[in-house]
Image 1 (spheres, rainbow over the protein chains, first blue to last red):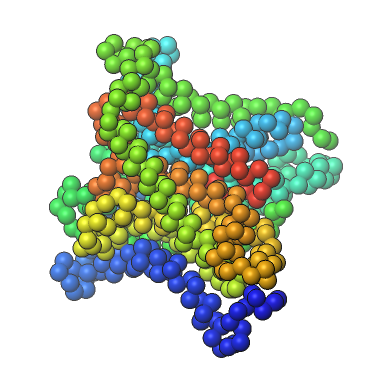
Image 2 (image 1 turned 90 degrees about the vertical axis):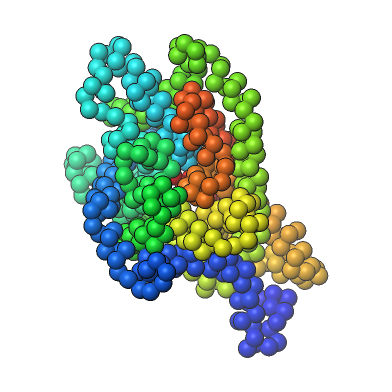
Length: 294
Length: 265
């Protein structure tokens, strides 16, 4: 390495602090707009209105109706993450496996890139236009199939509706995340297994799933967090009927109910704890799943 | 036994996927073409009402300028930082990678609680203006996507040789960064920029809770009262994401694939 790379090499002792100095703007920014706001939320969750420490706010989040809201948010996240993982895996494998024309895979991954990013209020409205009370598909079912889903307890503005809508970004996200792992599943392994007399089921049971498992679990956590922290889609779809924790935080912040900033902070702290646990599970899985990737 | 034909189960799954992905889009299109007077197909009323609504142009302009501002701040902040870490402090790469995972634990709905509380006393030119408060928050949202894209870009070039060559020809740090390094990581920087564009054009949570009027909050207002216009706007929004992703694909040909998912939901 030439001295040009290290113009300050003469004073060896000062080299490290000077090199760190260049990172100051970045760390100052992250501190001011990410870490301090996050820390402020955590501290605020344990504060009383007007100062002083208290556990009341956090304790209140563990009582009704908030405990049910956490449970509902977690339940919807588990269902859409689980469903997204299974369906996304099947679709991705169908598109990547031997025999499927190459253009299907290209089309599918491009489309998944778009669909995984198409979320929020516009997505909510697309599903209202499709499966809402006067939606196109609802109308088709009512007029041509003689089946009105709204007569049978279905509504897009309820929990099932939120789950169906979330699948529109969960499945494509799974396809994008799992495709490289499926590529790592060598065609030779499948051939070797079938040469040894294994059935398709045995191949998946003993080779395919065990190799893919860390990637699938990692993707599951990603999908869980994705759905757990979603606000805009649920707000656009069912802001007044499905009480998810992010929606309630929004209510407390925008003053639709009695404004209580410390309670909003306590609810946010609860979300932070759930997501932090997920992240701690994610990091080791991520390392393990990198093993089989080409 | 290599398969020559597509497997029957693969056909089934691909049809399922195509149906699930396309039906809502086609339905939204048909819905947006319904006439406002008769509720029947087909008329372009919804579209003509939108393009004559000055709120539409005003909010889409705010969101677009916000995306450009977010992209500029992100590039100014993250390009030199990533460059410096790769060149001089490679030990810090895992730290930056870890920091890029933090926004997963602090999603927009949690971040906005902290930002609103912390900056509520800030002067109006910052707190009350989208180009102040919102832009700073969006830089944080853009950080993971920008960072992973730039990190892949810097890994694929020979940073040390380029820097050394440039400096031994007498270039300053600034010249090295803008005239030597930047052209070499252009694809990565553009990739991160298009993802940022997609985030900012669609971000609703922070904009709505901080009471700003951006394109997504405008869609929500239309959504509450004018269903056919809302369907047209939903399609338009889909096309914006589509354009950003196609641009991403186009500049990324033959290069390491950048992260592709950026939306805040």
